[in-house]
Length: 156
Image 1 (tube, rainbow, N blue to C red):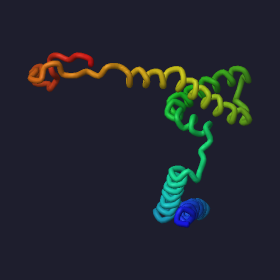
Image 2: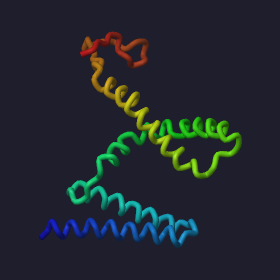
Image 3: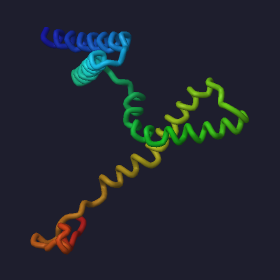
Image 4: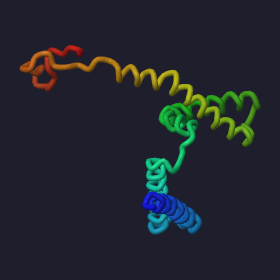
């Protein structure tokens, strides 16, 4: 019974947060009150989603998890990829790119970001995690000319 009540509270927090956020956006006006109302709604949404996922009442699809894992790599390369694609399309159309190409261009940028994550970002992070960490060889090693760096280091 307590577990069901906790689930209802979590789902209720999600609904209230969505209502607060949507109503704040609908009111608009961009003043401190509506901004604070939207921020409270967004905070309630995030809190509810975290609680629901941790209690296993909300299942996050695997593609969403993978997209979230690659989000930083997408952030790094999407703008460049879309810019290059826009230049190519501008040359191909010999003029402005039609608005119907914006959706595919953003999708292309996300796919390039995912490829960057798989090909470069993850292998680099794996390498940095697995390489030996430097340790101090001598317990009483003196720093180099006052810079605080010990003279002799060796990998584990």
